[in-house]
Length: 598
Image (cartoon, rainbow, N blue to C red; front, top):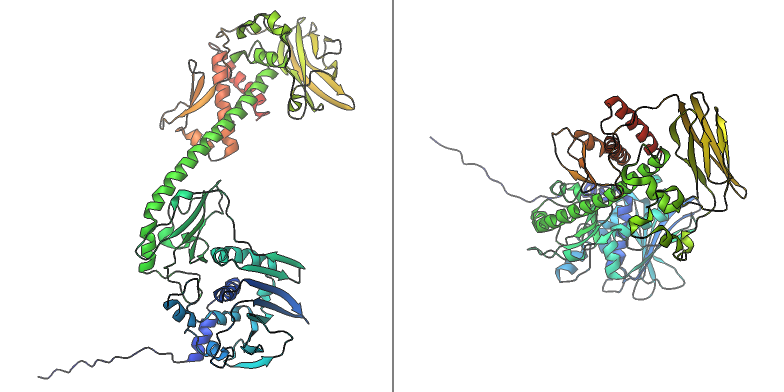
């Protein structure tokens, strides 16, 4: 019995069609802006200190020109620019050899960057000077395997390289100078900083000129992070913490050149903290390996795994920083919400009858603030440890300029709504304010009138008026007109004149500690929404309640929800023992006036 020996063959891969391979490589760069960035990087690699990009049009032909003052094209032994080497050594970059000898600050390594002109225009012309000072030019055309080199006459010898791409593709013609500037500012941010190169973009079509400045990030730089060590080299980090921004992201760089605008495009980084809207900045890992065709991607190899491991301790640090930022924001938001709700509550209570809404002595506090001592209780100043005589005789303190009220902007009647028995008299007060809601104490005259209904109103032209109800029940509207020079404002109040009032309900004695604050207590699954703790003068809100969770999705809705909880506690405290239907009526009344001022 015979057995056939297995036939084994060995060999090496080779290009079957060189021109087809070159075509594939040339068209692999899909982003024309990336191609322009590669041309600029070639100038930076040649030690250029000044680079000028010109976008223009000549005889109806759109062109892009890039000139630099660098070392120019590598020369032959005869001292001529070695264009032949550039054109015949695709995928065999001389830069890779230079880098292998220890040179730093050089980015290219694939020898294919020049071919990316296919994604920009139809024709490329590259000019550089020889050692003899004469200019030489290489011309290449898209889709043509040939190239030509000839001498180019010029008045002055060219220092560096001039690269011109003509017959720009239709999509590239729309790239403005400003857009090129912004792209290069991000793409080559650290390369520009490290090399100190000046890049100027001249847009002749728009008649504008731009200087490419390395992109600056907003927010607070996290200085303490520092470089991260790894077996393949240090990872540079520059991360900023700022206000939440859905467009915020962290870019991935290699040796100063951006390779991914958003590092979340790599699956292994699509998690916290990299998708946080609080962070922006860069992670720079010089040891990463790029995809040669587009140079805008990373090979998923051991180098990428090394970067992932190096970032693990940084991730935990950033998560803790973000949590602290969120807590600080919640505290600031709580202060703003509290201030907004308290102001709305104060304005609402001032618009309603003082005898019905006396919680926290808001009316007395307001009168004390605006100086209407004669309408407050006799012992008002004694609460501050002073007799009325002492308070009135005290020398007034000189006001600062910003404490003086501005021109008349609005007027309001206090209260705006009340119920009055037939034949009874009630006093109303007109409060004139400027645009910033400061009260105007003088220079304003007032005219009171009954705009609708029966009854009489008496006033000496001051901000105080007394209304006397008629003998018949009805709805009455009184109006005040405030005048300051040429400025006139009006306000109205509604009076319900009734035959008899509801019986007085038992009230809690008024307290004077001021409006309450609020705090949160997470009690998920429990039905209570809020509780008022009188000893601490604080409203405890259940932030685990489903209604609070729902309201928190929208800032405006959250403020209104908390305002309603304040109104609920105010009504429950001020009208203890009142039937449920009347409590609901009071709740509607108070929330109506509060929401007007939210």
